[in-house]
Length: 353
Image (cartoon, rainbow, N blue to C red; front, side, top):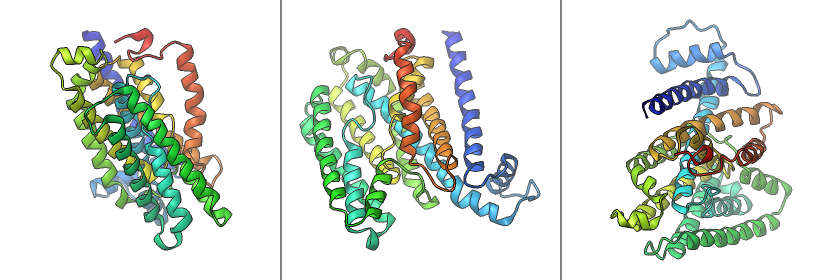
């Protein structure tokens, strides 16, 4: 047990270092390269509000770093971490190892809302309107799934919840397709398709606070409920025997996760595979203890999406590739590899807990 705890601490500290390093890489690389040394020196001066390092870079570099790349990298970290812990939560309450944050149809609702604004109101409302439309669509989808799938929280049946999410997702996807078909020009279609595949290009300092607070609240709440989540994996009957209020726990998790994903998807579009593969990667190292799993997942998810977005920004400069393409290209084969080595379980390697 002591060896396992020491191993976990080493992994945790290594991931923290890797997160800092990935942030530096994400800020350095883009359509124009900025040396990691200059990025580190400028950020040190800016964060500490002191000129520790004498500037050896051009003044316009500071604007690129602070106004464009840092917000984008931070949004990548927040989104990656949020998708990862939502994946953990969805896999737990559905007891489905291939569940992801979008299993309740949230991304389909967001896509319908965003595409509706793109097709009918982008010229007047602007990009803020797309974000707002996506959020409204996601929340509407979440409310419908919750009301029908759980009977207003009275019956948290896993099968009923998943089937409701699938049906509602199909409906909203059909609405999105109708909207795209009704587009008046190719630019609207291109914008709709690009948004639906995910993008972090709209990141601004003013848009980071709400997703960060949502992520922090859901993470803290999940850690507080981590022992209950561990018991849920043993089955609903076992949870009832120990006196746990299953309906209340699942309702809290579903609602908090839905709000978090709605906010993230509204800002970035649908980004696949992170919420699916990251929890399994972390289970391989820490087993099924949710306190450890959630902590590692938020770090690995942040690192993974930062690096994927860096690739998306640099592979065909100055154009951005939709981030969802990169996560799918990397995530798909990796997920197949995980299945091949039989680590596809809730307890890590060979079901280890």
